[in-house]
Amino acid sequence: MKHNDKIAIQLTNVSKKYEIHHEKPTLVEKFVKGRNETFWALRGINLTIYRGDRIGITGPNGSGKTTLLKIMAGITNPTTGSVTRCGKVVSLIDLEAGFHEDLTGVQNIYLNGMLLGMTKHEIEKELRSIIEFTDIGQFIDVPLFTYSFGMKLRLGFAVAIHSNPDILMLDEGLSVGDAKFRRKSQAVLKRLISSGRTFILATHAVDFIHEHCDRIITLNRGAAKETSL
Amino acid sequence: MSTNARHFFELLWGMTEKELRARYKHTAFGFLWLIANPLLQMLIIGFIFPLFVKEPVRHYNYFLFTGLLAWNFFSMSLAKVTPSIVYERNLIKKAVFPRAVIPVSIVLSNLINYITAFSLFLIPLTFLGTLTVLSFWYFTGGLAILIVFTTGTSLLSSALNVRYRDVNFFVQAILIIWFYATPVVYALNQIPSRLLWLWRLNPLTSAIQLMQAALVESELPGPAMLASNIGITIAVAAIGLIVFSQESRNFDDWL
Image (cartoon, rainbow over all chains, first blue to last red; front, side, top):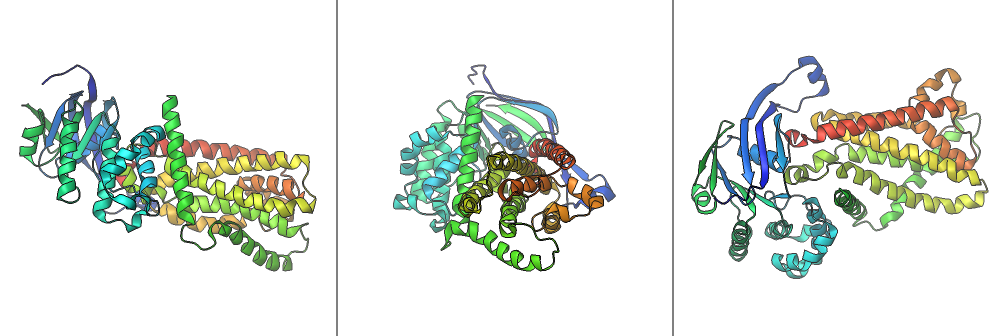
């Protein structure tokens, strides 16, 4: 473990409460019934992640792994406690999400890149490399509704890894496209992981964590326990 | 800070382009629908409505078209923005970006459509001979109220719709009533003055009256009307901004 003492993400006493809505509540019900049932997905999490840390988060289903990732990424906010974040977070989840079917591959690269926090200038610089990486040939200028699912995933993966994140997040394993592309993406991931970037992975695959991570957070019913490797 | 602002506007523009590109893709007449829609509305209302009114409005078809363009901007924006956050749940769950770009880009794309249709409308309007130097200022004033009010209500309704999906149905219903509560097909001087307070609650009254005054020399909104309409516009915009920024922190929990 080599800390260079720069904090990437710090969680202080973070708890997250969800209201359980068996169905979406209506305005009327809200006023009639008042309070909803609640559920604490995370309780009192204290965690400091330094730059370059490689964190594996594990735990049974429903233990709060995804919630923790979302709070660390800033997709949702904790009910109590505070989060400080330093640098750009990109998560490799739902890679194909957020593409627009009527736009071409290139137009989608721009839109998706900007959503992931890239500036137009950065995308222009990386455009050729992104297109090369997707390896979908002349389809890059065709509207996305003609793409196969695998092609969309490749496009999403290519944009995400070129967005140059300081903190990379991965929920569950990642398998993108056919065998050839999978090898290519695994190789890139390994390179990204070993390039000193902060890496956070939530998975059940303990072997993968032991191979790639140097800190393990085990979640159980919203509470965290840490083991160092 | 300035790179943040720049990124916000780049993203906003990217989303707006997406809206514009997607809307008229695969249509034979493309953006001609922008003008064809209000034109059809105008022909029908312009034929039916004068049959029931005692006091005819001068240049009625132009008067009507002015109001229809502005009304369509408002109603199309609100109808499309309200469920927009729910429709874009994939984006919300995937990435961290200023959530406001989703509703604001829809309003902006509608504004661009509106201005395009309006520029075409200016051509016959110049031959009518009602445009004066003051037209520009009245119109800009009306447009400012219209944009601020539309953005405010859009932020409010799209944010609330995440938690309470009834909001979308409520908006659809209220828009039908709202059309008749706005002086688009009639002029406000046909309303008895004891009922006028109702229109003071509707900021679209001043917005559209200013535009009609600018383009076809109809009556300007009175000072009380203008003051209360502008007051409500600012209040709605402020509430919209506050509610959206509060709610947007936890959109993900409800999607």
